[in-house]
Length: 162
View (spheres, rainbow, N blue to C red):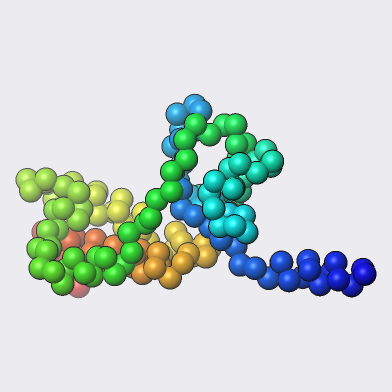
């Protein structure tokens, strides 16, 4: 009888974590994004309505937090854009606008171009995600965005980069 209990525990431990990307609005108004660990049912409803007082959230920065359910005002799932969506837009003839990629108006100064480039390059740099086990589509998306940011900067930079 004791062997069966251990076998069941070993089997359930091999089930991979199911996570859902969520945006949380906390009671104090703070907004957080991250990946919420789901129960075996794989449903957000079950994660938030089980008897546990806390839930497990991995932030986009890679921090692991245990948050009190009563501190959450609103929770919404979100689907991060996939890299193949970027590629599909490019293939469909969407014109590459380096100003749009860098989030700048057409009359932006070279200094504004550089500052926007540096901020976005830091945001999407692979080192920022090195300790996080991202799904392959997220890794592809980050890589695609960094490539777009670099190309946009090369097109708008007054000094050619070698």
